[in-house]
Length: 390
Ligand code: GLA
Image 1 (cartoon, rainbow, N blue to C red):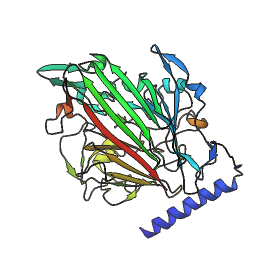
Image 2: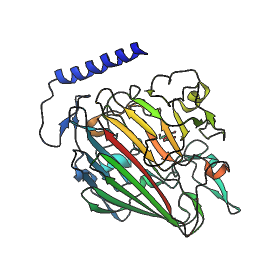
Image 3: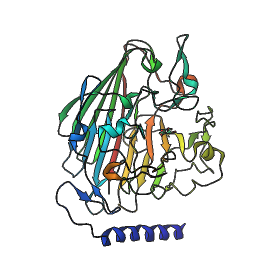
Image 4: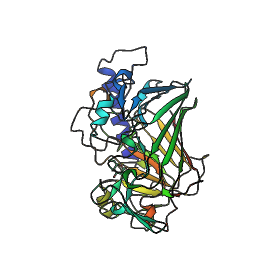
């Protein structure tokens, strides 16, 4: 354990030294260098996000605070494009993966980067469910299941946008009755607020005119060493969950709640994401790594349900949520095949992790899981906060 730690420290020091020796010039504007990589950290050119799509204007919006953080968001998919936070040396580091233009997002190499996921985060078995005695069929876009709202989920929709202040953006999308197979006209509003404490609050609201199911989340792909760094297996993770949801080979929860104790899924005490990821374990095999929902211990918005730390940049992420579950995905489907990421970077296998706060996958078919049903007259309301420190 101690030896591992020393080795890690040595590796991160040599990474930092390499960056320092590689002749990175100092810059003074918002285009700054990060200590973990040799490439430039900046918010993409907003001109590359100007487009007329779906009868609406697409744009890139920027939120800033007084503590040196910058968040860039496009209303195409309600996406987080860049999230720059200070590292241990005060240098801005972009900690999320993304693309430099709306055109690149439209190519859907990785369709979910930073997006608002709706109407339903994660999978619903065979894309089927029954509500009030009526059967619904959704898009089958992930093997035999539906994933993240189907072929035309919110990740491909243009939201109407209202910048409320320098640090707050409101996005609204009206999903028509029947879209993706889901019942009811659903009006979803997402408000992003960047706090001066380097917290990014995401507040979700939704209403419907017919009984439906809804499970919204954000699909940011984080790398606390800096987006474009080769791996996240050295990021140190803790999750307040004594149980997780085992899945079948199509990644649908079996319905059991399995205690994490004695399994590679035990993140109750911090460990690197990579520590047990290579263990011969049926669940890791099914997920091709971690791609599972963690059953969060009793919590409220005042205590973090997950904490991640980079020993390279010193950046720590704390996640707060009102949701009962956390989908932890270790970037197992990333390939790094093309250098189409921000700044021409490739995003290799396991070079990002996702912590998607949500109700459990397949809840519409699993009566023992907390309900995701929304009825007319009710308001879906949930808050998640990603808070950064160093
Ligand atoms: C979620 C899913 C994963 C994968 C990613 C996107 O985290 O659980 O299986 O589909 O989204 O690639």
